[in-house]
Length: 138
Image 1 (cartoon, helix red, strand yellow):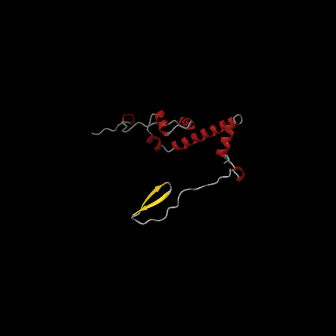
Image 2 (cartoon, rainbow, N blue to C red):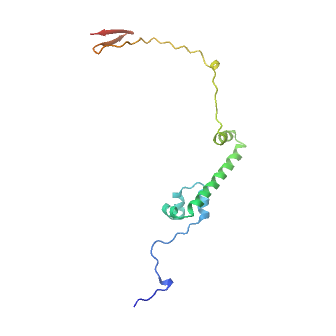
Image 3 (tube, rainbow, N blue to C red):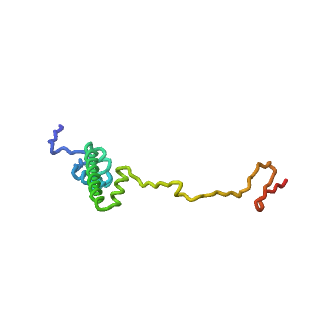
């Protein structure tokens, strides 16, 4: 006769469910940890994280908070450091260093050529350059 098992007597098969701490995921995302690094901290695989329906939302939220924090620090630093202000201007405002060169700034350049003009030769001709003169041998 088959006996029905009570709930506590049932043996569950498969891996134990991993409880993901989403606050920790956001904190790790904020310091730009990779999924592989987060998986190592949480003690699971990257595949486990990818299968979790809420992981990506919390991960992206953490990364966004980290970027905002970094931007805030950069703006604070730009108040004291001209190089940071210039870099932020180039990155965010599309500013760039431009050099304007005009003709008056350019030296007078004269190009001289003393290379002899080469004429078309027939197939059997051998050309020997000796002191800039062409010699044809048949």
